[in-house]
Image (cartoon, rainbow, N blue to C red; front, side):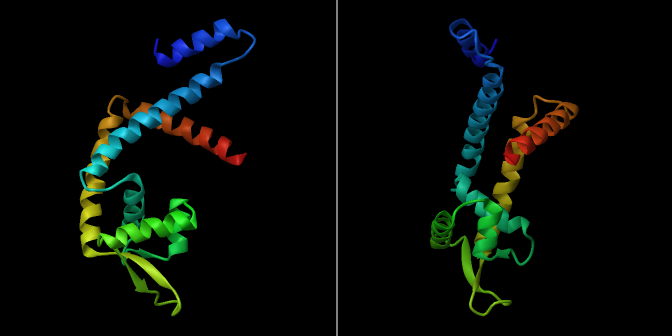
Length: 162
């Protein structure tokens, strides 16, 4: 029995009229997310990064050369609001990890680009991040991970439709 089973047992005693099984699924996903995020935050912190700064730098890095995106493309890729992205850009620019460069396709606009320091940092951080993630899923076999991925993909697709 895990902590969630204990909570479900209590609810079944107190409210036998309710089917609380979905509470178990969502409770476990929530606890799992919390635990995974704490572990990944420790890794990011070793590089002076947060989940937000890692997200921006990793998005630019995986874009490929020249490692630059317009603010609106960066915003769409990271799924944050304009104000949030402006703040992230300002903070990362202040510490020299990104820079604004003139957009060659739009003389009025600019792109957000990794600096060499930002490129080097995210390359090192993403390698550590992948290692952390591998350790986090090491309790599952490759087959179990594939099954879990398929189930989570289906679950997410159903929830995102609404």
